[in-house]
Image 1 (spheres, rainbow, N blue to C red):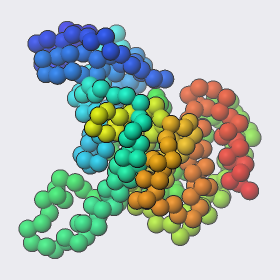
Image 2 (image 1 turned 30 degrees about the vertical axis):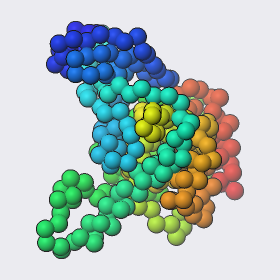
Image 3 (image 1 turned 90 degrees about the horizontal axis):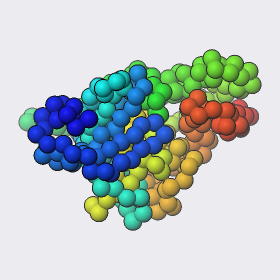
Image 4 (image 1 turned 45 degrees about the vertical axis):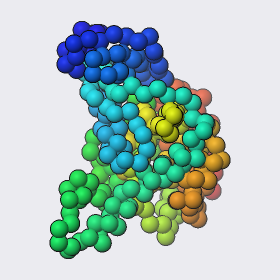
Length: 309
């Protein structure tokens, strides 16, 4: 590994630190190099390069907003013996505690960044001498992302769409339901999904949604802090509805009331928020069902039943 990293990073010295980490999908290890300490995530799956390229693009996009701290990505490398590795900046992280409020504020800033950019560009339109920022940061008026990203190890369809409801139904829920059908042929799930599709537009009536850059998988295991403030990592980014971000955050805990208060002071809840949150949680329950098995079936079906009434 050290020899490979020397070659790929152009370093003269690489030494494992003994610091390791990992989650449900990939494992990681830190290395000291003459160019600084790096963290290397490794995954042996054949599709790992696609997964890590999506993560690298996600980290890069969030980094460019200057809103919330993420590890700086360096390079995706093919691993010896199959799979791939993602090399990134090493950060000394601890559990999120004292900076939860700041995370709420910064996450809202991340979600508002594209909207603010659009408003700024509209204001500056036709003004002589302006436009330098426009070349650096382009306003995004559709939902999607330039590359495939993976929530877990399953790829997300990020083809650009003008309509958020269509994007979410066709490119988030439908692929998950297709996997459920292929694996188990669960008739009840398929019938409930057919019924729910007719109800979804009602949840978005009179709602204007500006595409927001999302982390995409913001559960408690993907947030941390250091002495300077909060850190988010392991993203599966795309431009979507800001409310989507809060779905998985609320499923597994790890976020204090101060986080939510700070967030909603900048992005207040709008009518229908709670039902839409359930709709967004449906994606994550289905995604967990397809990753980890039918233990998540009941939660998936309950949401579809509740929202189909």
